Figure 1 (cartoon, one colour):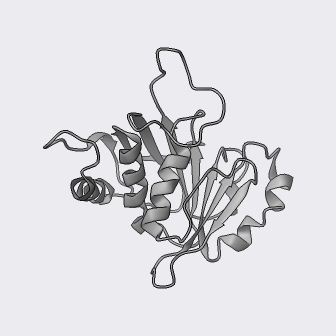
Figure 2 (tube, helix red, strand yellow):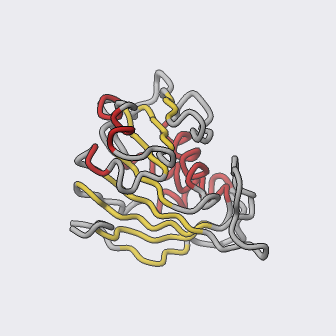
Length: 203
């Protein structure tokens, strides 16, 4: 398998709300023990997508950036059927020794672990690993710099899904995303459909 893994899906969201809905749609495809690596420049939509994932997993706390505390534990609602969520920012972690201090192996027993900036640092933690690469157009002023808490609501985002470890079947993801778009009326023109750039499902 290549470093990037198997290409599963490539989509483009049309707003920050739409990116959250994509994360929410992804939630049913995840279970405890799954590792999700998020890559993308500052402001690409990593935390925004994780916010939607938290909604889909029915965690009790609002998902915010873990930049200054490295990791946040989000417990699910008592009646929620899925796993808990652990959200990690690995930007300041130098390597595997720093990762070990977070004890993510134990967290994986009961949670989905989402790691921003995790490439080259956490791939060996799980036998079932998904990587999402996020990118967004540069503004007229150039790329975003500084600290981003939430994306502007008109922000578009391209998301590429790769299966790094294990077998992933995301064949129903776009349909779930479309259903959520319809329910939430997520800032799309009437009749607009998800823009799927590539879909290749691993058998």
